Image (cartoon, rainbow, N blue to C red; front, side, top):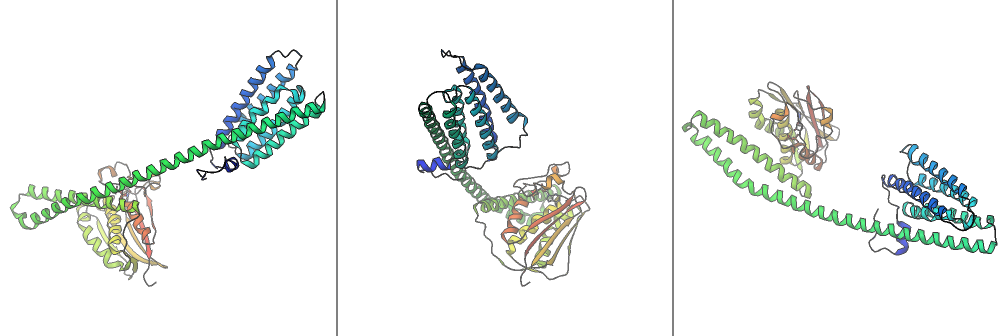
Length: 430
Ligand code: ADP
């Protein structure tokens, strides 16, 4: 719901509490219950005041007890799931009828039990939508009016008394309504301010992440070039320990490079400024290239990395982003498969789409973890995965990239048996 900040008095009266919030009525149920107990307490107190005439105290006590029992059944014994605006209206109708009977037996229009109506009016003016408020107020006014005819004494005096009460009830409803309306406006404004603050903070964070990762990339690239130069030109001058150390530095530098790329992609995705340049891409050579670059990692774990499918499939995609997607999925398949395993990549046609499948016979993913797999920074924590390094960003980014190119990413997995990720992309000239 949006409540305009500078709305008129009338519109605030009409709109308040049209807000649909599932927890609202639970809260109002509590208010109603407390109101009833406070009202019973007040009426009992008033009945103790000496009026100089015999009041029907026994009727008051009996009525208070019956209202108390009703409240107990209504609020404590009825199933909690029965709630909402209709229950509220029904409750008000039953309560007003009981109050009408109490007033009738305690001096009619002169009864101090009319106090109940005032207290309940505050509650209904705060908790009901405008239409229901009108119905409830009309019902209460009709009850008060009718009491004039059943009370001893002059009808004119009784009618005047009921008019005063009706005026009082309307005033109470109006004040209650305006108060709650002010509270709603204040809360809406506060929410807007908070939302604004959160947005600018998040923007600042995205910019910070982008700048930091951008700045870190330059020294990292220099290190990469230095490693390459040492490997190609000075490798034979190094001891075997030195070569191992150099290789390890290269691996860790590669990981740092991937992390920085992921962070840059992430902040661009969040900002909505991730550049995508669509073109016609033949899938087979792209898959072959990614497989060739992943062969070293696969070889270290003796994993067979195989490209299947002879079909010529072309898709409309951004070739660099497509490589990124494949590197993530094939990289994961290798990381989360035990030594000697198998990873298969295949492209095929599926109607108007090209479909790429990356399947492995690795660790698999439990059903519970499957629910969170595409969440940012989510990593599976198990005995097997805890040794594998990662940031939990790969699948989040991969999914965003696939969707940005008009496709879908999904997976099937069985714990201990393996995982198959597959994504679609619009086919070129289908
Ligand atoms: P990262 O690999 O950096 O942790 P990802 O977002 O790529 O982050 O993957 C999230 C999690 O999903 C990983 O931590 C891993 O546990 C699980 N996962 C991804 N791919 C596979 C796979 N092929 N087999 C088993 N688990 C996988």
